[in-house]
Length: 430
Image (cartoon, rainbow, N blue to C red):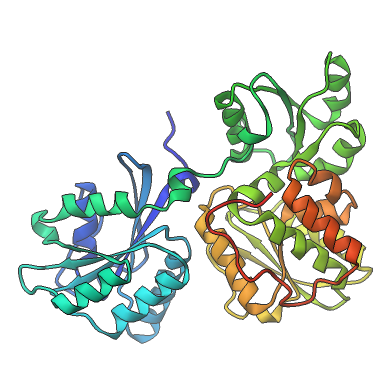
């Protein structure tokens, strides 16, 4: 039995000043000595992660961070790591020591509010000082919960756990499906899984496993084939499948081998819908037509891995984009939680499927691109568009297909900043 991946867990970030008792709070919440506790300020350097089960929510991931008021050059690096945690936080715990409320707390609370993240103010060390009732009333008026704790004695921890359960976002409790809503009970879905140099030895990648599990949960049928076997497999069926899902790298062959009356898409486009906003990614793909030789393009990968000769993000997508543009583009590549602050420097951001991430971090990156006026799309949408089959790949998703058809019928270029006024953090588009 393998533990739930991080992408399936509710991310609970623990923020506050140095020596506010964040590490003691984490240890009390998980009932283990996970973080080092010391009277010396700045003991926690890099974020400390601890997965656990928090019923009735299920799998969660607590993230203890360095003090946001850290100083010096090394301190600033720690603060930057803490800000990266903000981008993937589903619930924020703002820890305040002995009711010492000030500018740091106001800024942190505002950053969480801007991201649409529900927050809980934890008045730790409440045996040494109680919070100002007027401040608590103001927080309550702004729908921010308050809980008093003495973490090193375990006091107030039960109340904090209950508060976390009550503020957990609805989209996590009722998370959007990847595939289950696209097939009715008894219907067949064909999954095309290439086995090439990038396929992990002896196992499948997470989106493929997730798709199989969702089909089982939906009482649907799944048939798994390699791309070379698809045509023969379809010929053996006595009725067509409800859907064909392929790895994006095999898009062209699978599109050619799948009858036009059968809906087809890719694992990456399924992730675009589940993790982010599919219609927004479609708009970003249309911005590819506005690229000119010499433009800068950011390729963002969620996972850190050693790229191979025909790496999808570092080799194939740049090749397809430059072929589409008809000239050389300037590419920059980022991995993991690193993401440039100056997104205005790029004409396009192409993001991976983010199968190992939670939805919050993808939506946060989309929000930052929108604020910078930089279009963003993901791997599957980009590949389908450059191959000229995006309309076919969007057939299972009527809302996103309508957006695509409307924009292409109008013939309007997707200029920088031409993005929707709001990216939904509640429901997936399509």
